[in-house]
Amino acid sequence: MTEGIRTAIIAAVAGGLVTAVISLIKYINDKIILKNAMKIGLYFEIEHHNITYLHNDSDGQPNFSIAGFQDHFYKSNIASIVKSLDLDLTMRLSFYYAKMSLAKEFQDILFAKNEKIQMLMYEEIIDARKKKMYEDLIADHNALKDMARVCVAPCINNRAQLLDSLKEGLRNDPSKVKFIDVSDEYKDWWEKRLK
Image: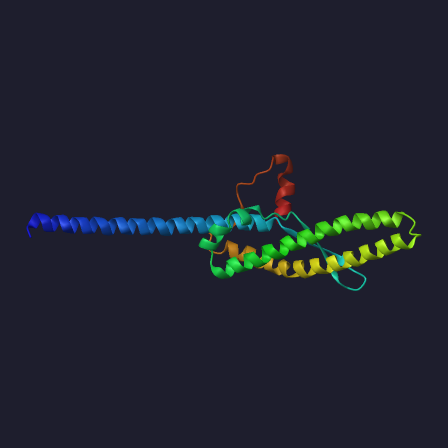
């Protein structure tokens, strides 16, 4: 084999290795970027889910209200979430979103039943049919409220743990965003609210 052919072979192998290393670095970099994008998107979506403790019922059971629950980012990026985040975090996210979605559905049904109960309370419940309807509504209402409690209660701690897990490994803490600015008129109020 001549010196020129040997040099060409070595150059081709070296070029192939360099190309492979560059491709590997690009692949790893893309995975890191995707992982961080998923974490930040999920962080902001979950951070806006508000679970509020209301009061205990007369039998001592807690009541919660869910506000601001959206799962658009989670649903539209589920394939990327599974590819980029570790299995434990993915499973905790799935559990959280499943329970919160179910609890939100229960809450919406409860609001509708509350309206019917209120309407019946304002009417005179004289005949047995209306009385039975009222009793059935109350029973359904209590059962739904209990199912909603069972869904929401584990989500309270799970939400806090997810937010902490999603912040891990990010260069900037998403809870301390710098890009949100308010007019000077509301700056004092805003700064107090953030603390």
